[in-house]
Image 1 (cartoon, helix red, strand yellow):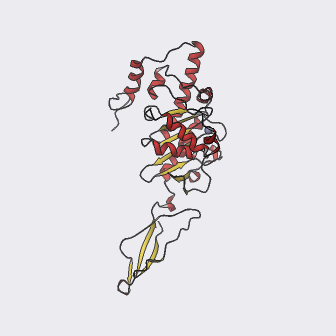
Image 2 (cartoon, rainbow, N blue to C red; image 1 turned 135 degrees about the vertical axis):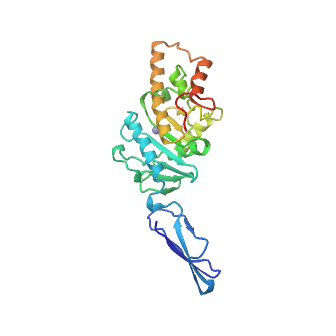
Length: 289
Ligand SMILES: [Zn+2]
């Protein structure tokens, strides 16, 4: 990692500051507390400095790779057409979000192209523009502190439910394994939300739905007239939930075609399936060491 020096003269403060050499990147420099070289008995001191996030090794490289893989998972599972959809992930400690770049074909995407933003939407690293849905993702991260990844698709069946403005009822145990109740649908956005900051308004509409629901037990929502957003503890889980959501949306559609009077699962069966996989008393699968 390159190290830069800063020079202080007496009480004057920094005379020569370390400068960013990466174009378009605001670098947060951290200076050593002790002088690297003392001159004239401390009248002039040279301090070493290095960038806080280590940009030369690629900022948040692991998170970028996870987010790229989450995006590619949507392609592998047939959930996206062309450049539709986007997956992001967050490093909660650093308050940084990594998200797919806007309009880049999935087959050409590289970790370097994943865009890094802070939680206020300021681009911290990346030469490309982020997905236009970034403000929606950020609103979810700000309001749902337990989540670490967000996935948005226009997958066919889940989007059909969103366009029909109908929540997906919990008709079977596959649904209950992942979503502890119906997958809700938002209200329509108001004209001012559509004309103003539309993507932020989409996030706000989602958060309104979850004022009375737990986003960690129902990790998906249908945005009215638009499409689903899903989330999870990281980018991989968010993408996985998007795949499962599409599957249960398709099965719910088929079940209601076979029997328009099909009823949701009983509370007991729904709870059994959700709670054996999630929460403190979960017993499904292998014990994680
Ligand atoms: Zn969309």
